[in-house]
Image 1 (cartoon, rainbow, N blue to C red):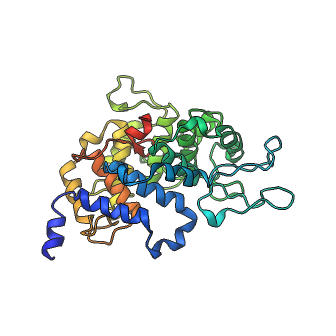
Image 2 (image 1 turned 90 degrees about the horizontal axis):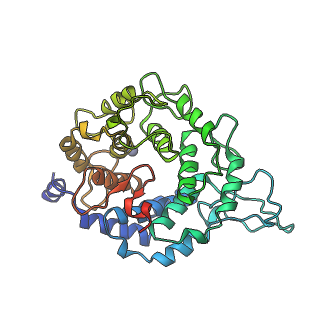
Image 3 (image 1 turned 90 degrees about the vertical axis):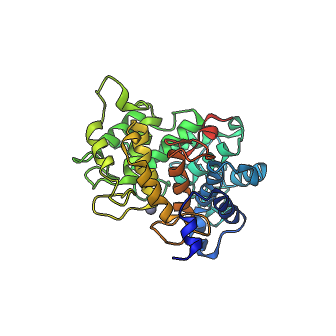
Length: 352
Ligand SMILES: [Zn+2]
């Protein structure tokens, strides 16, 4: 191990992380070409990450807002929206096509995850939400909810699971309007995803998983079905089994100090946020070994800035963002507090 690598693993190198994200914000490396369809998601990691690091002054907020808004799709005729379509945000230009000769938007690829990321970015840059046509988004979003309460991400179909319930809940929360989903049905679906061991699987009956567990708990919190700091509340009655969930979550901290997504898996940077975030919402974050988690995360910190998935791996945007978010949960000085259930900083969530 060279001396630079050694010194970079001793402390959270905020300045280097800011430079790393600035570089990603200006020009994505060619390795991300295959992810062009997720451009808004990549932008969300970079821009939200800069705000966690307290460096949002490095970006052009107005320019970002108009760039994001250019991905929104609308029905060609507002009075007669096309049956079954979802009018949200496209992930990138490569999924955006002009309307056909009849004026009908044939290739409408609005996606729930891109729509979540678009609104999150707009919140971060302080865009005035009264200027967003939320009615079109919400009315058409109802088309995506299934009879069992789950959501598909795009009107042409695809997997239906907890991830897209989370996106839908966060979209409604940010637009401050719940007309886009049937909350009761979504709640029922989520409750059915809790496994015998206390964690949540992506669909009912599937294995518990850190990401799915975050989606379940954060959605219930956003929808108002569970309270913040649940463990400190005197009434133990809850729609989910909280003691079992707490137990499963705490057991995900491995001997190396990091968090794993499932039993017998290696610790991975992002689960420090997915599971750490669940514990924060429950009020159980205080029970983890914070110093050990910090030490593990620092072994995943790159000397070039950013975080890798595993110790001493090259950094990527996804793991970098969740590394910063985890350090925010650990109250690293200089970082902005994070609104776990919404996936943006408290400043962005409150809208100041
Ligand atoms: Zn990961």
